[in-house]
Image 1 (cartoon, one colour):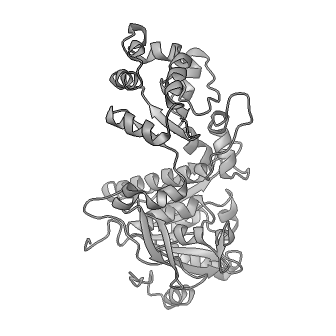
Image 2 (cartoon, one colour; image 1 turned 90 degrees about the vertical axis):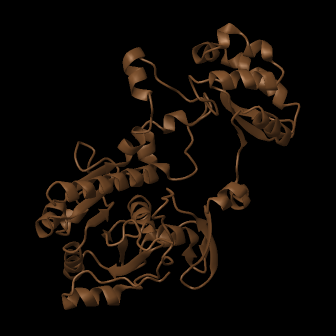
Image 3 (cartoon, helix red, strand yellow; image 1 turned 180 degrees about the horizontal axis):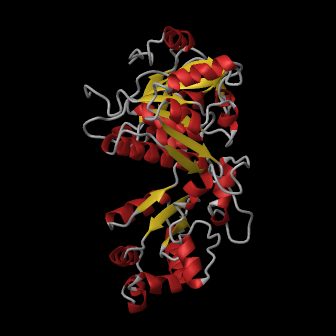
Length: 395
């Protein structure tokens, strides 16, 4: 165990709620940042009541708010706003994901807080960013995913586009926000000690991972559409039905991998075909290749398919459910399934910490807090003028 966490000493004030802002705060907290989370006095972060509840509290909350302290405030009151100012004056980073203009209405916008603390880095996550004609529109992850180009691609051809089964737009925005915060911290350290605003839009975070979508449109007028389980323009890479009804994922799109794949399924004629030696030739005949692969997989159970293709050095895998994940030896070996306890002492498995740092790995310091659990201690220090209140290591 390291003597210091990578972000030990970093003071983070989290004003956001639900997903994007708090996920950014969680990521920083996992690596040792001291995150004080401000929650509404009545009810707290709505995530406490989202999805499946255990004795009144969401188990999702236990993941999203681990390693944080909870302070209950009413930000609409002068007292609540003054408490935030006092904490922001001592903070390194402030995270918020309200609709643009909300903090300004409370006297807590960038200009006001930057004047109070020039070293402050303010991460602002919103649907459409802090500027532009859409800035003041409300924006949730689902809209960012659609506007960023992802939703158009996630469907079977000719059928209604579907959403990814998690709030991927929010999480992508959070991760881009963490990148921005760490970059701004480096700039502050190396170039004069000033903080800055980090402006992250959900739709831009999604758009940033859309690969060749835009240049293909600009150069060729190509509008990429839904392709189901296939990877358009790269072949073969698809899901194939097996004899037991399961689906196997096969990625045989490398030139040498394709030859090994075809030999493994008894189709060396395709593997040695000069017209299929490169990806562009395979893309032109992808239907023929996919049909050959599935003709082979349909005659075998998925376990035999995976064993055979792994022996041939072909990337292959099955589609995991969470039940598969919870017992998978790779997940367990990499400590991606962590056994912990909630604040009431009840056992709970939670996802491990990513990325893996060799010298200063992240860790779980403390369980997700009760609403307002740290209000008295934190605000007592604020009233006493003793600066940012120290956190007790509850690990």
